[in-house]
Image 1: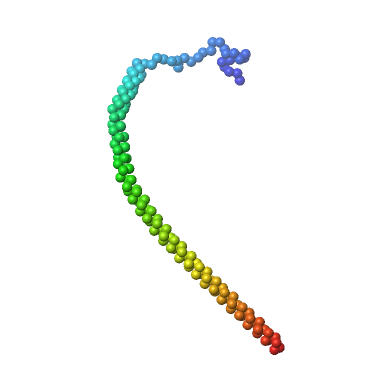
Image 2: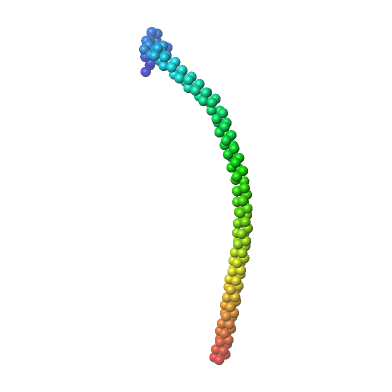
Length: 147
């Protein structure tokens, strides 16, 4: 249960051998050339990107200016159209409000007429019920008075 590399006192044994096959070695000439070539390509690519950014800046500014001009023209043309649309919306709203008021008045009249008809019908039923009750009571008196 003890380690092979330690003695009974827990200290490493002297003279233990190590495997030296995985020691650091200097890179060979081929990998050094490949690294140098990769660094050169990266430097060239970086220079190309910087040149592109430098040359593209004026073009990007011009495109931005043209976009601003187009936005201004669209705003100028959209203003009168939006104003006309607002006027037409206002007129349509006025017409709709008038028709809605007329419809509401008509519905109220219909509801009042229906309520009046129901009230009349209820009154008629109550009146005929009283008549029937009077008739039954008078018949009972007659029948009981005869008997």
